[in-house]
Length: 199
Image: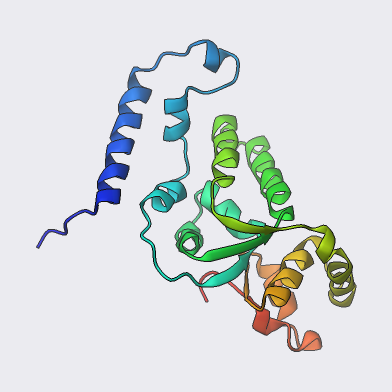
């Protein structure tokens, strides 16, 4: 039996069709020559994760902290991006450090030829539209530094873990090195706060 599409799914499908048609007909104009993609082309370049975000249905949301390694997978397709995209339905909590880190990831991908510059710019703008509760880095600094010294691990990642502990939720990271460090035997008790997207 064929599944009936919801109103939001039909709207997303129509948007995709309009974007595809406009992109095929669009000739480069002054905006493109100036380095600013046409609005319709921007929508076509939007990450797949945001079509999911537009179509999602309201439901009771789980709370979690995510780090930049997860958010970057929304913007650059990778084998496990679907696992990261599933978290878009959750109540997401992040330090504002996340935006700087994702920006740097997008820059690296563009410099390595893994991503077009237009896609990186559009992805950065789309990221700002994801509903997330953003916390100031300054309030986390002292505890993040103390944790970094304890773990002998870069402080960037520790901001996310400190926030997760303060909010009494789990940190979800795709950074296998950090995940392994938090589950090491010499730091008993930290592992319960950190998991991978596929856990």
